[in-house]
Length: 389
Ligand code: SF4
Image (cartoon, rainbow, N blue to C red):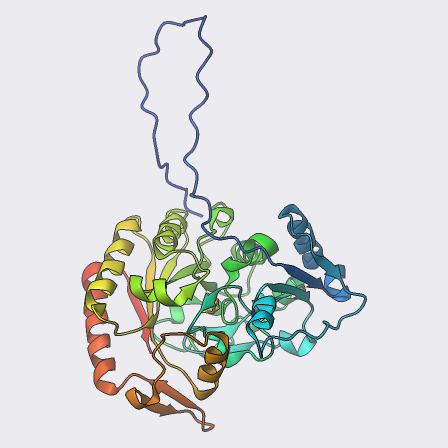
């Protein structure tokens, strides 16, 4: 791993004559990473019997205790009690404030491709405690919105060798084949939102950085949080790309509840880049709000100012979209949302199996895309543009 840069240097000067009557000044302190702006404390934690028996489950229990989380129920079996998550606001909030530590069925260990991000999806957890009113999980996860953390992490990591060299999403492309077999860890969760309680992302990063792999690999994760202090000194070996999900100031302010503020995410991006991690921007979901050029321009300028010279940077751009199912769920979760989900203002995209997505009309897409490609090239000339969708 490249050496961490020295952020402040104490200038040396000729030593003054000793002054025995004065106590020595304290040694200079290393500048510290700013404390995280948000640390979730679940109101209720449920741990299944199998999860409590696993080493990762035990590490999570120790972290919960250290974090002062009191309401931890060790269940006698592997079934979670009935958890309601719909119907009324109180049930929804109770589910959002619940962390469950479980061992998923073995079928979950068979990894799936996850285009356009990565060859394989590897899940640390499903669910997220934040409150984004456009949340991607609304259309993909069913049931009450509790955050389920998987306690079989060690087994999952031990099984990854078999996927190396078998990817077809990024490995098969000329542009991204050089990344090695890619594994995406933030498909169904925000790993940094729960890292202080689980330590799972750090464990993955260390495994990717130090394991003797049968071929080149890359772990990928994206986040709307800033709790990176525990990641900076890990032996990541340059094999984890940490991306930060960023948006225009007004979009983040209105729609991204209980996440870290965008300036704090950008500071965290700068810190991990300075620690030698390859980094990325996930600009998502892009919305053509009033003044969008100025707002997204200011965002890219702030990123350029925060990154150290020579940072290995990628950019992914995802425009806002919704499905009939995600709209229903989101309106159930956030009935007073001002998020535009008006089918009559959107174009309809149909998937292979009849699925429907509402995206921006062609002209809007072309205008957004043209602007972003030019603005990224101008403001972040070192960045590699991975995809636009
Ligand atoms: S941070 Fe991501 S996963 Fe969490 S609520 Fe927001 S969009 Fe959903």
